[in-house]
Image 1 (cartoon, rainbow, N blue to C red):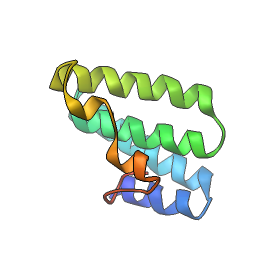
Image 2 (tube, one colour):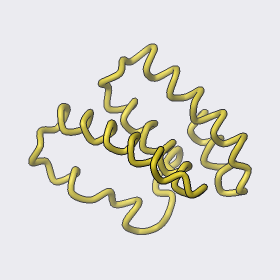
Image 3 (cartoon, rainbow, N blue to C red):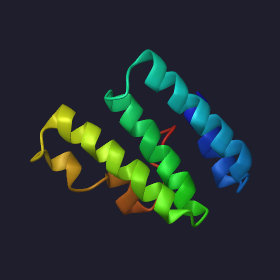
Image 4 (cartoon, helix red, strand yellow):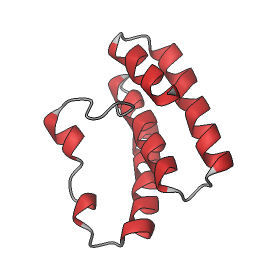
Length: 99
């Protein structure tokens, strides 16, 4: 739900509000699911995309690398999902909650 609100605000270019909800979602996932959980990786990717939209590329890269490390650990380094993120390659938001 928080990721969906963040995505909605990001689409409206209300980046401050979007970041607040994305950070809250990240905190919940890290606290309840753990730092290495795949849902935490998804939330990190969402936050990174929000930062990318704002031109905060250095911050986005740090988060994307962390998300990729989590996914590599969960899926294995040769998993095809690591090669391409279908939502990003389409240029759209993908499923709800994904920026």
